[in-house]
Length: 264
Image (cartoon, rainbow, N blue to C red; front, side, top):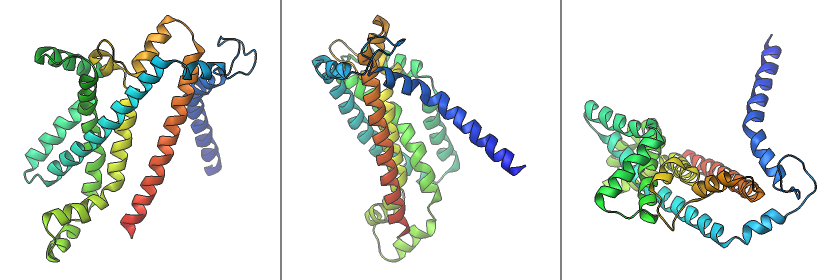
């Protein structure tokens, strides 16, 4: 009976992964099609990748997207760690619950509502839509994600660690930098990489706050897809998938190193 359940679970997982990855592999496969369509594979070619790397406008958009993602992930990680510490150290249960609830509301709110609210806010404040409006928006929706990933690591930490460091004469800064931050490092890395990936693939919020002369990759891919099938999009999707895979592997390696350092 156990063997049957084990085999059925493996079959279920294989079906789930097939549904998730088959469309991606389909795009990657036809990015090498010399026929220019996604219905008949005529032959292997790298022409679409060459065309992609000679598209100056698209390369600038890729650079804009990476810069926005790195800046927003870095700033939101710092703010998110501070926010998680504020919630963790709150003495009153009502205050802690209220802060956590306000944080979670931003996570479950629809992206369309968040994007529209930011558009109204920037218009009212007279902020020109472009680089800074996109950056601020990405920071805003990334901070709650970092908080929700860092907070469990703080809750796992035994209070005796802080008490012991206090008894040994550690200052508040020493407790933060030598006890708390090393312990929550895996959560910090998880928050950073999650914020980075959210920023890279965000479309709904960015669509509302982009202005003339500035756009991100998600919005550009959507605009090109509306114009018709172009295998440059397939080539771009293949590169993005590879980049995301490298990010996941990098996060896994850093998380493993952080866990080993904490154990030591």
